[in-house]
Length: 384
View 1: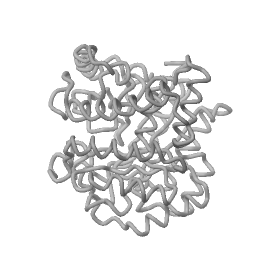
View 2: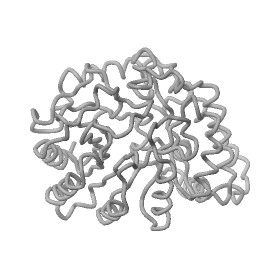
View 3: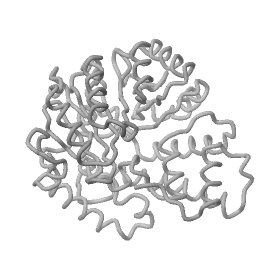
View 4: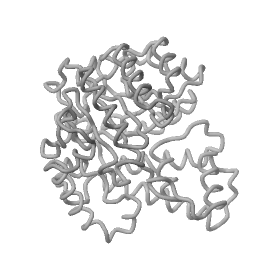
């Protein structure tokens, strides 16, 4: 693992102060247990020893329930173990924003921490009961004014899929960078059928929003995952696009009790890699039955995918998504079909721009800069 980047999802707690109807974790899983100082330190130490650089994604549950002192301890430990190489260690906290206050926002800025906020603006459609939309909107405006590193993760589900363009226009006006994240049939999402997405609606509305963003020459924000797909089309999938860049051995997820899984989504128990307190080396996590199980399922599905014309742009997709789509060894589920359609549209649009030498001034700066970079250095690829 030395010389590699490891991406680490940390779940300080599975407890939460909201009951989002699409959550990966069912209510009975959302206990108040908080990751112990011993598990926290051991994880940071083993990650430092087992990789050249790392990025920690603090997730949950609601991670801010672990308290400010938890994060002060975590970042102090990172400084201790990384020392002068601290710039090789990054952090993102993904929060529902309920506990997000200006003082903590400034603390994150001082520690170079990116904030991710789960929020759909005025178009949540009942996804997050108890959410104070107005207060969270004010928090986002504060971060925009202060120039903080943050982005919004907007969940698209059955109740708001026809509001995707409305979300784009709202976040565009507010200058809030955001990501569309489709609701998946796992955890609470399995129980709440009204959150289930119609794949044709999701494809159609995604393409409409991409086309609007593409030709929005003054767009002040990137929109993910479309910007990731643009980069994938022009170069290669980046490791940050975990579902389409062969994530195995590049990502791990550590639960409050130290159990380790290959993904932050609701992994089946058969994919459990072990417990961080039972290993002396991150590499040991990839030598047990849990890793063999997910590797076997992934390889079998990829073998069935290899004849697909975009296989080199998705590496067979996400095994956890395929598992909840019905069969981890088979392609063709929701995530596969929607990615193929949306990516295919984006790829065709970019080929048209380049092949026909379209006037780049009519496109947004994120696409313009990506195309210019490709034309300037045709052989460049993004790191996997």
